[in-house]
Structure formats: structure tokens, C-alpha cells
Length: 380
Image (cartoon, rainbow, N blue to C red; front, side, top):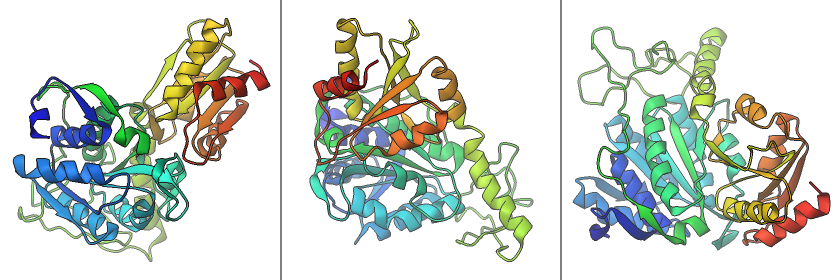
């Protein structure tokens, strides 16, 4: 594993790429609990952390792990954990706490089939709504969906950057396929990808733990540096004091932690398009590992003379409806393959475009032929 750190190009697994991306982004505290198919990320981090002067902590469970990275973040560490569906469920209370306390952390969910213990060794995309709505209360969360081993590296770096920029938890939704597949990856030199550091307080005398700047994001001190800091899980004012009995101040806080993300959703949004130059009336939309089959299906249909476009969602949340509606303004039909019952396809309907879901369960990804056959049954 150590020999991979200094290579420009490497043949590595998705799990290793994610660990290397975290190290590149400056993560120096990792806490996790073994769970298939995310265990290899923890294994890689357990080897890399001592080399890089970081800390690896194996918690007794996923609750301990997410609370450990929250504490480490307030101690000044860029922090990350990795889990799969059942562990992700256990982390939801911690995610909500991190949202309210505006704690920058990264949570990786290597999705597998569910519910419950489900299919421990097989992939799915069943956790995408849990990523957005899993914890209680109103909040917005940033979520990325890599589609290849390179993006397991680059989107981990992006996730760390965005967590620091917006003082918020950021989720990366991978799956068993992406964690275990091996591909050739370009590993950038230090400095080639810009890194974002958290905003530090300017002066101690006028400091308030949750006093936002004009961008709605507060600065964040490191505990132990002499600032008066109050951090707890109730709705609070700018100094951290509870305001749960005050409707106006409570609403003000919730609106701010939502708006600091939603007002930047077009800036956060990441997606890519192909074959859109000739204004196709039909488009295949996908994300994550299924997009590998979806793109191949579109390429084959194009070879057959069928005019169809392709769009891959990279940032699942927040949902950039205005930007996507503009991108798909001339589209009258969307085909949407995903490894669940059609969850994101349902949400995609808010754009007002007819959506034809191509769902698949059972822990097996759609093949290009299956997608092609589903499209031809409906017609372009």
C-alpha cells in the first residue's frame, strides 16, 4: 500500500483510491467499524494513517465511530468514516448532530442490498434517499456518487473540501462494485488539486461559536485554542445557548443551516453530459456504477442511428432543479436505470419531464442490453 503513494499512475481498487484521496485531502483522523463491503477502506486507512502522522481508531460500533470523527473535527482534524447500509443507519443521529453543530466530516457509504442485513457482498443504490432524509428535522446535505475508481479518489477530495467550506457533513455514496473494482488511476502530485481549509476566527474577544458571515457559514476554532465554545445538540443561538423555546430564533437557525447549502446548490452541482449537441428528445440519466452500463447503452443506440443523449449525475444532493431543468429544456423523455426500486427517478419527476424508470433489485447491475431493451420497448 505504501508504494502506491508516490506513483503517478497506479492500478488500484476503489477502496484504496478512496483512502488515498482522503490522505491527499488532509484527512488525519479516521474512525470506523468493519462492515462488508467497506472494510477495505478502513484497512487501507489503518496502514496509511501512521505513515502520515494521523490517527486510526476502530470504534466498538458505528455510533462510536461517527461520534469520534465529530469530536476529532472539533479538535482540528479533517475526519472521515466509512460504512455500509446497516452502519449508515446507525450513524443517522450523529449525522443530524453534525449538521446542527456545523461540524465538517465525511461519511462514506459503500452501499449493499437491503433492508436490514440484506446482501452483504452485493451492490445496490438503495441508500440515496437515506443520504438526504435519514436524520430527523430539516436540513440539507451534500452527497456525491462516484462512477469509477478515479472518482473514488477525486470525489473523496471534493467531499473533504466541501465539508470544510460549508462546515457540514458530506456523504459519498459508493457501492460494492466501485469498492472492489480495480482500474488504472492517475494520482496527482501535492498541490495539483486545490485544498480548502476551514475558516478560522479572526479575533477571540468578539467570537461567537455560530456567528455566520455573509455567506451564512461561521468560522470554526479548534478546541483548546482559547476560544469560549459551546457545542451541543439543541437548537441554539450564535453563542451556542439553547433557544428551543423561542420560535423566531429556532426558525432562524434551521433556515440558515438549510440555506447555506441550498443557496449554493448550482455551485455544488456536478454532472456530465454526452451526445446532447444535436438536441435529442430522449436522454438516459444515471449515476454511480450503473452509469457505466447506461453510457455503453447510449453509445450502442447511437451506432444504430437512434438519437438519444446521456446525462450522469455526480452530486446527488442538493438537487439542482433549476440547472437540470435548463439542461433538459428540449427533452421530452427521460430513461432512468438504477439499482433500486426507482427512487431517484421518482425524485427526478419534479422537473416535469416524463420519466421512465428502469429499476433493478437483487444485487446485480443492469447490463447495457437490458437498458437498451427497456428503451426500445417504450420508444424514443
